[in-house]
Length: 387
Ligand SMILES: Cc1cc2nc3c(=O)[nH]c(=O)nc-3n(C[C@H](O)[C@H](O)[C@H](O)COP(=O)(O)OP(=O)(O)OC[C@H]3O[C@@H](n4cnc5c(N)ncnc54)[C@H](O)[C@@H]3O)c2cc1C
Image 1 (cartoon, rainbow, N blue to C red):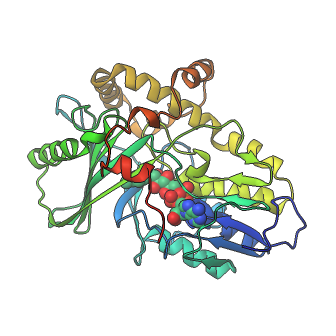
Image 2 (image 1 turned 45 degrees about the vertical axis):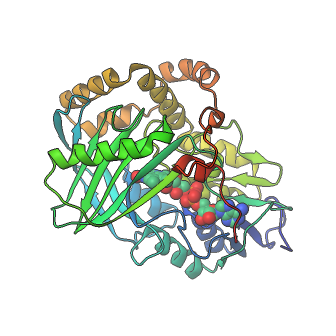
């Protein structure tokens, strides 16, 4: 690759971005809209190569404002299919059902993949329309002279395994909090307009993914009236590794490449798009130092609170999940209650340094134990060389 420009070079130099995920494409939209030449290098032949048209939730509880308004403010138009979910059903560790409603959406359901209507296709179109160049089948070893690194997860702290399928069932969003279904995490079933996603999102015991997924399918099968047709299995990983600084010389890291993901539940799309924008804005301003200040101000407190919450929930196990469900039952607005627990507070600020020390990030070495294993964790942590 030639002509790469440092993140802090003259205003007319081309900016190079590695990775055409939500973080890289959001950065490209901001840069191109700001008049900078930008090239996005993507190693895969198209966008969203690691996704399978599965539904994901664009969370809408960590801020008072709506996530779609925040995206509009950073130049991303909601020209992808989405559905607002104001009601969600949670099963606690004893299988008890809790239904939560809010006037405002808990989250927006979006689809991830390379097809029409997906978040990824829409972001790519918006980046192109703004004037960015997208180069597929173009892996980057290292942005030698600087730029924005948005290459997604570099490790696996969490995995999600599941099925995408067709169904005749009505729309609904269901989650289950029980270690026997998803150790340390949650199982979910999302159905919208005849398509469904069922998955176990696990934070430990990754090699037994098949067992947990089978239990998850049985669990929802017994409690929700739905059937799966044309089901296809999928799996993927994520990482949440809070760094103090996500600037390495002339390189600015964004999205999951920077470890930006909610440590409690693994939500990362919103942080990816917002961080991509903030990195690009710092480049446009010729002030890369500003990026660290900006992301810390926007969501540093949320990431710290998420890490502390994860630490606590892992220690409490199913007992913690029961407490969480009961507290949500009593909350006049469960969405607002959830949001409050992502605010930085004296408690999270005091606990966070301790949590950072206690939690062995990265903890990959704990898990890779089976030679030739093809579980999601092994496949994603030791990817095959690209063709
Ligand atoms: C199964 C699953 C379910 C999820 N569910 C949710 C959810 O419900 N809500 C939510 O908010 N988040 C969810 N997440 C997390 C969310 O998908 C990610 O946080 C988000 O996609 C991160 O965006 P990104 O742009 O940082 O990385 P990615 O989306 O991973 O994009 C990175 C891109 O960089 C490319 N790349 C990698 N290396 C190179 C290289 N060397 N050169 C060039 N290109 C490269 C990759 O091919 C990829 O296209 C889920 C994740 C998984 C796996």
